[in-house]
Length: 466
Ligand SMILES: Cc1ncc(COP(=O)(O)O)c(C=O)c1O
Image 1 (cartoon, rainbow, N blue to C red):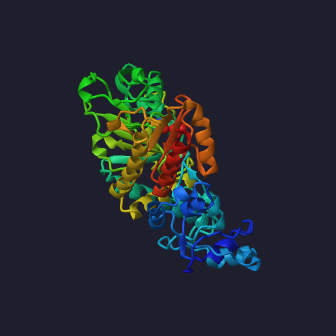
Image 2: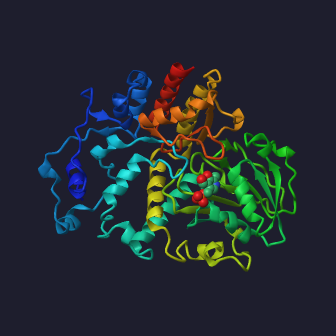
Image 3: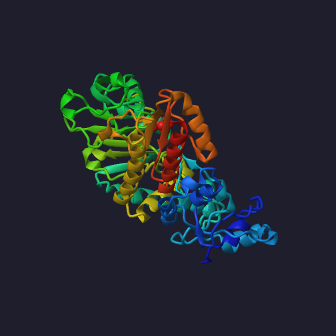
């Protein structure tokens, strides 16, 4: 099995433009996206804080060997025959290849989803894109019923089970249609049209789920945070649940409003069925799966590209779908066919698998949560210590670790803030169109260096505009 070298990477990626020379101020042997961005920034002095630089260098996501510029001859394409026959077999445990020179062009992406993916995962996918291991083809070209893809989906499921310690009495499904499709699939599978179901609505996504469930059940909102602009989670004692409801639904993290459940209500319904939309905090921290009947999540925030929706469901809840349930939404059919009833989103599932592997390599979800807490604390502290220049409307105890909404006291400066941040390679900071202001989504794959750069920029912006 051949080792992967920068030259190897570049010969297989011959369409890459000739890389620009990397400008580095020091002679150290490692660099990072953050250090490079800081060197080029007008806020360079402010941004080059020792802690930021040290953290960036220590970050496994951003520290890479320096990619040296190769002579033009090294970029010559090699023949397909040679490449496929001898050089594309990757050792899955090999360290990821170094980033191409284009890494300099990567920004800190604070988007709410699709969102930043781990650099390591992107580079692994890049190295395996053309030919996956010994298959002789790309994952995108494989039969979803062949042994190679079977091994990919089975490993993805096994790794997710390890990460979340999913008990054996739960099925894991890799589906399509986004979390929005689950808004219909959940009531279609868990109740009949006349059954009562309860919704705690702490933001726009919970509200959307409720509205869709009304089509297939007697859905009722048992608590809503709308009057307080979705800035709170209720005290569970204040929620009057219907004991006859078929399930209680929550959105564990409201992506738009930045409100996150820190613990979960105990359902009073028969069977104790709690259903949670975890799209925007899935795999961001450990979760006791046994407290839930169903957990569902679109992948495109924390665990992969859009196109994959993960459903974790207690097996005894499968098999009661309403007669009108489309075949694709019937959990029984999907479970019996191991998510392969029709052609699944193969490449997306493969990418999720790479992310799960990466999360395990980081030490699992306890370690991931520690990193997420550190990033979120830094950002919220900066907001809270700004003497009102920045404000986060969400009640402190339920602030999201993943999505941090904030406004400027001088709201007329918000457009300028977003524009200047983008010039500094920090993008997608605009708040959702329904709430305005700013929102920094700091999912698992956002490195600490990205948040450090953002808070340095925020302090600098405040100093210039206070
Ligand atoms: C919490 C939450 N639920 C549901 C959705 C809808 O997901 P999808 O676009 O995958 O249907 C989103 C999308 O941003 C979300 O953040």
